[in-house]
Length: 310
Image (cartoon, rainbow, N blue to C red; front, side, top):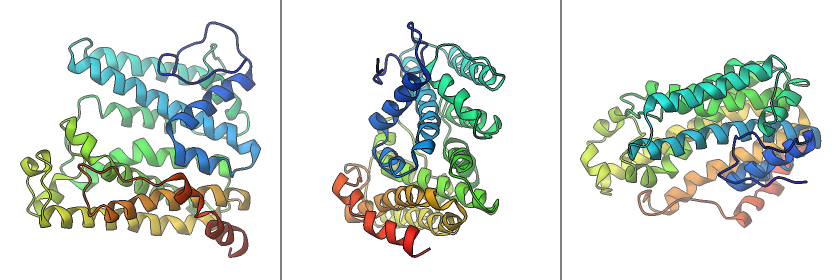
């Protein structure tokens, strides 16, 4: 029996008792369905590392989906913010029970409990993740980059910290660089999704940066592209790239067998920034992406860099 991911079963206890293998298959399907770049990179990891990575992503994605679906209901007046908080608290209780050795028939929690037998992932990390996702419930614009950084840390950098325990590392400084990679990737997400977020009435870029480039919130919401906007986006791209550059120092600190997957993920994600540039910084009407061919074309370079050049 093999479960396939769908929006209706995500994060819900499945009626029929399932095996651990089926639980991991469920988590894998969530990754394959939602995260093409992440899933491609994970396939280059050793088999023993793939399942735990899928378990981490499945939790991340499912909790995020819970909030996204609840947000839609919140706008329609079908649910209150207090009820959404209760839903998130339910996930926290499930997670705490999992760490205490108690799980129900939930495939994600089953996979997590098995992962914890081999890898020490502090419970504070997934709890931070849930707190970060909760920041989207009643969204407030970020006044400063420091405020945005906290959000990026909670929704992305903690994922880097969790996966680092699975990748293995020789120097704890690798964790600092894992945080940087998480920040870089989330900043990339924000730039890629600007158009969609405006349609939701949101601006994720720091408001202080808009003022710095003399570009108003009104212009942003009107999707107006001018020189000020272009300079604003160039600034954001360089900020993200600076985090990518610094994060590269951590790759040689990872176990050799893990470096390829992390490096190819970093490069392919970072190349989204190049796609934005190729689109002439139009992030309102053109979604920057990398084709499958473009992603796999990086393989020879990454292979040399992580296996021969290191």
